[in-house]
Image 1 (cartoon, helix red, strand yellow):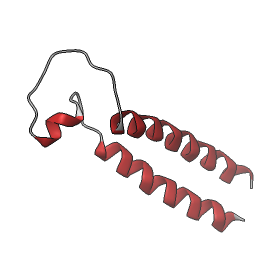
Image 2 (cartoon, helix red, strand yellow; image 1 turned 90 degrees about the horizontal axis):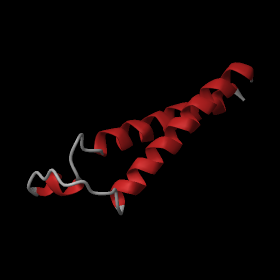
Image 3 (cartoon, rainbow, N blue to C red; image 1 turned 30 degrees about the vertical axis):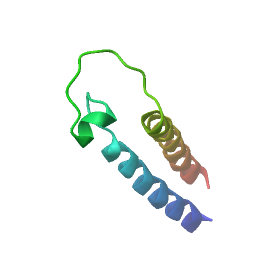
Length: 72
């Protein structure tokens, strides 16, 4: 059972690292493809929103897996 949690932690950690590195700090996804810098407030839409939500879910799963690994 312990090896299952270890493999789960490694997979979730890799996915979490990837999701964090794909996010742009202080800029929208358009700036990654040569878009201009804009000071206009905009909501996260499409892929940015999916990436943001998946990062939160992966972080919760990572912490939950770490706590479960302590008890099992």
